Image 1 (cartoon, rainbow, N blue to C red):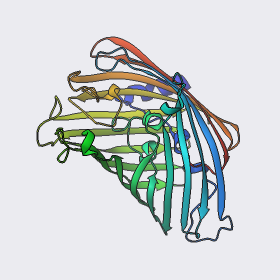
Image 2 (image 1 turned 45 degrees about the horizontal axis):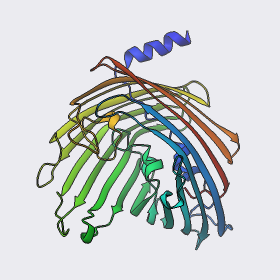
Image 3 (image 1 turned 180 degrees about the vertical axis):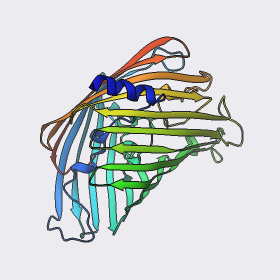
Image 4 (image 1 turned 90 degrees about the vertical axis):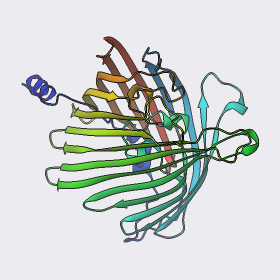
Length: 374
């Protein structure tokens, strides 16, 4: 009977895309030092130490998207100092050790300098902002592998959460301009919102409208060697239904992309994509998604090439139509409560536009001591 029910859902949702649970990369739920403007908290400071071992293997085997293997460890340490019940300062560092590169000089080191100020249902973050998966963007807009390649973002962030709206507005200063070596400034501006139309806490049911915009800018006006100015726009709107009691999540989202640079910098001026997903909780540790994704001339500068019509590093490499189905399996569990977690993923893919198979796998271990900084 259960198999018949699942098969019926798969047929009923003829388009399925799964935004898999990326809580392992967020860290926010593990923090000891909480900000609460309505209650007192005697814990004024906390030390954090932790790591994330990651192994991601993408065997996509496409001309514009051959795939790659990411194998390494993120290590972080820092100190949370509570200035008051509404203000918190975090100072620390994070290093990204990519296996296969033994030279110390080749190990990226990222400073963690963050000020968080909370007032009622709003929060302002300055310095090291909440990044990547924490923005609640879909993978057609932002690649979860940015959590390994560029694990921290720096800039300004404003958060708002109430009974009908979850809102995130941020500015990420990705790279400063250095005219002497013709290095362009790179800035991204983003906002994501979830408008809650209906919520039943007793039945654990939520109906919402996810909306987002993302602007990616490369400047080049003051460089000794002129480089093209890049302005990319990406937006999305859709619907999402979550039924927690039966472990079911359904969503459909449409994406738009547009190159509004002074001189066109991409093969395709504008594009569109559609994704939705059906996610079934097998039990509290295992999840299954059935996926279908379609895009035409679509591009997002921070997303994985799997979802794009144009290679993010080389606009000459293109695939105008993206049309694939995917099954995603995820197993996640706390091996030691709040100390050690495992996340295992397997994702077979079938490209209907080329009649080819591909796959992706991932294995992650995360461990924490004290207050989580990541």
